[in-house]
Image (tube, rainbow, N blue to C red; front, side, top):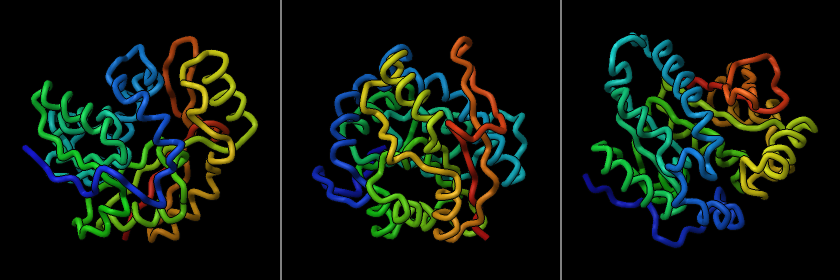
Length: 255
């Protein structure tokens, strides 16, 4: 099924940092290589899907044990990249719209979805352009590992909140701005272990939980307490923890 883009090929937007876009454009073709530049996202993906599925099933009173527990739910994935979240959520029954500012990412995502026989509504554009287009709000908005790459986080979060319907959810995961995060998520992951290309993250753009909580409230949602996410580098397994000093995830609800 073809879908119109929500923006022209050249995108000028407060949520898009041109330097960030150049970096990700070079990596777009590698999205679906589990051993490539996006290996950390592939490693994280099953864990992220499990959390999203459990959260949505609990909130919307769905049975998590059936094959398509998310059937009937409209979900927006902001900064969808190559579709690593969109495809498994579609298989769980959800109606997915994936938005990304990079056309190369969307070409990758559309091609792979077609190969998999999946019908996913991919849009080239930004969250604020989606708001301006008059798009109907969604049951859930996913903002996963994106906010640390945008130019104006408070306004970005307000636009994300505007796309959540009353009674819906916003799920956001990111990296804390701490010395430990700098040591492990930037120095360790990018320079020592080389799990990510150098320059993927910038310390001054990382987000403290207190900041994210304020931005979620300003966006008209009620934030839940953040949950720490910890990676065991030896087993490459993620787990929940009380440690918020590196990765964390939080949920906002709209009354």
